[in-house]
Image 1 (cartoon, rainbow, N blue to C red):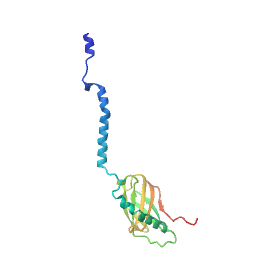
Image 2 (image 1 turned 90 degrees about the horizontal axis):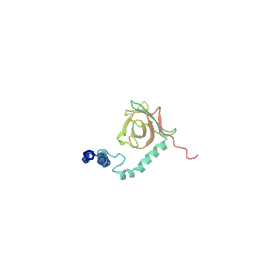
Image 3 (image 1 turned 90 degrees about the vertical axis):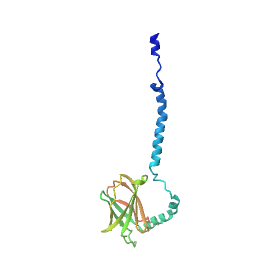
Image 4 (image 1 turned 30 degrees about the horizontal axis):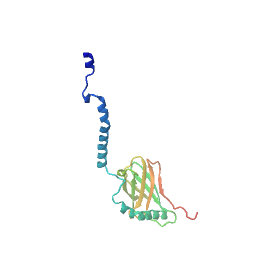
Amino acid sequence: MNKDMSAHIEKPWYREPWPWYLMAGPAIVIVAAIGTAWLAVSTSDGLVTDDYYKKGLVVDQTLARSKEAAELGLEVRARFTAEGVDLHLAAAAGQAFSLPQSLVLTLSHPTRAGLDQTVPLSLQDGHYVGKVRLPASGHWLVLVEDDARRWRLMGNVVLPALGETVIGGAPADKGS
């Protein structure tokens, strides 16, 4: 009978596996909640703006600037390299347009605002050049505008780009 008694000795609860299995689920949830709270507090949400109402009010002005570029038939041919960016700006034939002395190029990532860049471009030998950090590969939004903010051209580029990226162009003929 002593053999039966020694085989049935109970262990303390912390030596049993089942309480640890039961506590593992809530412990994982607590760790995940703390990690999520830290992430929410330590990073900013680049997709939400504080002044959304003011930005909404200037939409008409922004659309008018895009329309002005279309009426002028502006076209940008951009080449992105590791050294920087080289742009060629041209207007449609027959349009009275003089090249501005400088342009502003904005590269925006659709979802990662922290990677956005705004670069001033200067006119050199009929081309606009500027230093830009070649961003990560992927889909990028390109905005080109003059310093006076009278017109703007917007397009897309997939980097790294092979060859030139064309943004804008002559407006389509409305009669056909």
